[in-house]
Length: 253
Ligand SMILES: [Zn+2]
Image (cartoon, rainbow, N blue to C red; front, side):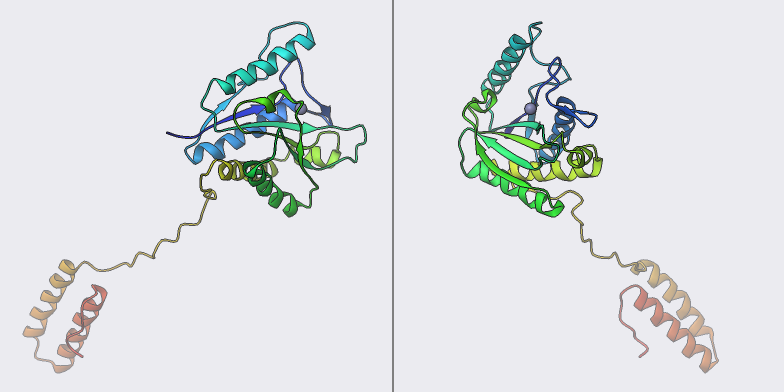
């Protein structure tokens, strides 16, 4: 049976989540979620989304009620499946526009959380981005699901540089790859890099042996008919060239 990962794009209208630098958290979380899904499904993992469009999972008009219903529906959804890992994707925000970095939130730390964080950390180091570490949060509703769960605060939407990165398609693709790799590690599946170069032995172009023998027979007829020693020698040389091209041994030295 394939492993099940519930991917939870944070927020959903009427709650856009944090906003800044022309971005809305719910929208970026959804974009990233789709890329992470691609990485996981590539490895045979069944990926289920808590929300499949930009709306929250509640129709309540009161914002607070909407939020509460939305979060408890996400929780119930994950608990109703044989979820192996629950991954919630968010972006951070702060009043100070220079606040920056990535962090992994969890209800309690274990090897799975550490594996996920370690994978993202390699990515952060490559880009020179700040690792804010693993943080325990026992008050977050989505982290109280039955499955092991992590909430990723994917950089600060209020930081112009990080917001620009979260708009960059190539950056997001690589970031999703790092997150996916970490989740795979957490659920015990070996990660296979995308576009892994396949080293194929060079195909040798060879003359087919049947064809070579036909050509050699024609050359032999010509050799038999010839009375010129030089011509006979040249025909013998050509016959050997044909043999070599077909992977056979020379017979005329
Ligand atoms: Zn959020």
